[in-house]
Image 1 (cartoon, rainbow, N blue to C red):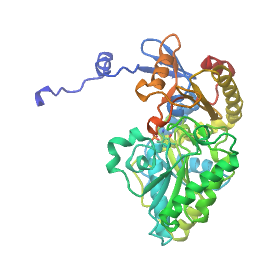
Image 2 (image 1 turned 90 degrees about the vertical axis):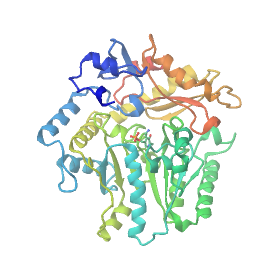
Image 3 (image 1 turned 120 degrees about the vertical axis):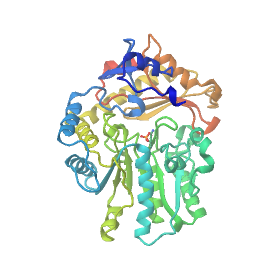
Image 4 (image 1 turned 60 degrees about the vertical axis):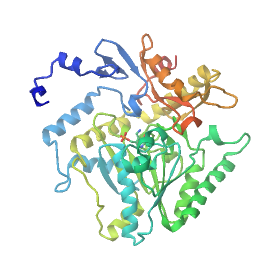
Length: 443
Ligand code: PMP
């Protein structure tokens, strides 16, 4: 009742204790690869949350850049003004693609970026006078976010379940690229890619190629199934089909992008550029909630030619403090040559994981790229049969890792495609991690 409403007071430790209603430990400080809890425990962070903290915690230069921007001006309404930090970040991102990305929209979360990319793709066809293009093709075993649009694209069944009736109807999913689960014994990569390309081509034909807006995929699948790289040639083949039918090719690099796989963009290892790309997480390394929609040449040129404006925009778009943090994070990665460290330590991580865990009777697959590695658990290695979901194996591995004396934070997920897929954990440490810390994580 109204009588129970208390005036808020200054938050004291006692209030915080009262507010702690979950069993999650209370993190109070972070430095480098370590996080510190209120009970004094030191946790080794092997995953930066969901591959977010790419420089680790407490990097003073990033904090300084944010403070300096906040002191100059903290908020600039994008609809009336430009801001320097946004312009500098957009220029950095454009250069990172050799000028391919010609426009950048800075958003706050990956979900928002994906939703924006969906809308931009549709609007591109409105500008082009092709309003009949309304269908999207995405993939099973994918994760694109939590908003209704991005959730509709994703194939994370348990996240979709409560909202299934509300999700968008013009989205059609094809199977993802998953060598461990789908590539037949003795099947070459070329043959497997051809089989996958046919799945996409068949979907285009079923919908009518002239009705498709875009195909969207994660080049290395993250949260949905645990660091699954595309088979060589797959991304290129999918892009070629989109090009053939005049549909847009969107890459969601929110999790695998911005250096995580050893190159700034994961597509650099595939030899093709997306028409639109989404990034997030490692963009600002968790120092600010920042994500982006990157607009490639084809879409930008149409926009210029029609003198069109993207019908989008939200209150915190192009936020200067977020942009300042992101730019500083990216400049540190470049200055300190951290992508080379991602490649070197990533190879070590892969080797050690395979040596120490490859022979375990319940480790079905160890796969990844750069500092983005997933371990899939199975009940039966021979048949690849996963554990019963009710056993919550990945949660239990996470809990055991976090408990003393291990004190290790590790990212976990359970087969997103219902009971057909296994549990997994993911190791995604900071790009500046050293050899000794990699060894501790694997041990
Ligand atoms: N796309 C991908 C590939 C992701 O991994 C995620 C987050 N796990 C998202 C989109 C959504 O990002 P956010 O949680 O920041 O909304």
